[in-house]
Length: 222
Image 1 (tube, rainbow, N blue to C red):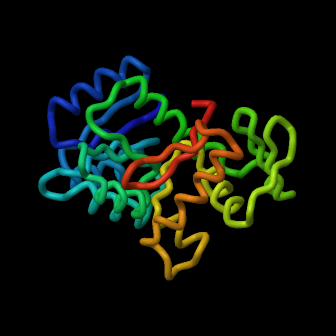
Image 2: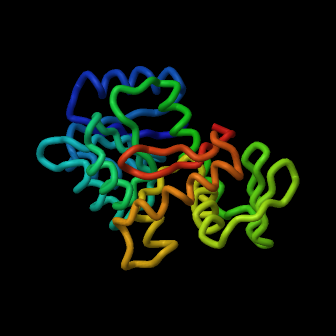
Image 3: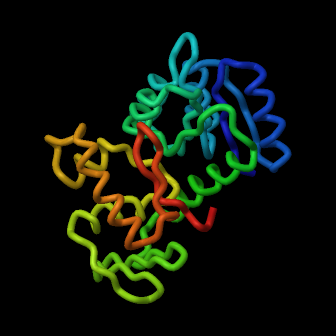
């Protein structure tokens, strides 16, 4: 059974997640704050952590940073509406994904499945397929309906970063610093025309905007 550690200070949320995930055959343990969450990761060694951000004693962001100091366990952050800055900080601190409260169990199951699959796949395939869109990393060729298309160097690098982490949100800052360089991070206006061009060439449904946070490539296998 997949072991999931739920870290949330709200008893109602913990109980709802426990009931819902146990029905899906997950093995669940819970923690009520970041201190217990860090200890639970160390002692129980879960396959995945669901981590609330706003908690007493130790916040989720602090717990995330501590866990990332010695563990690469997949972590999905739980957040309430309006905490975009916290979401960005969490993703940049090493969270694999985030979800905004309230959310449905079907969406949560899909997010868990994507994160776990990405972790287990380990090695990156030479050719990635997303519906009608294909990326051949070794040849640096992008095709739509088996026909190669032209991407500018920046368009290609942005698409490759998104394609290598399907289903995961990449923040504006992470994309800017990895493509334009470490001195960039706030120039979000650099990204908008690139995304417009990519959607025109690859289709409007492949790349999703997470307002105030970044972009994610939809994983058709989810």
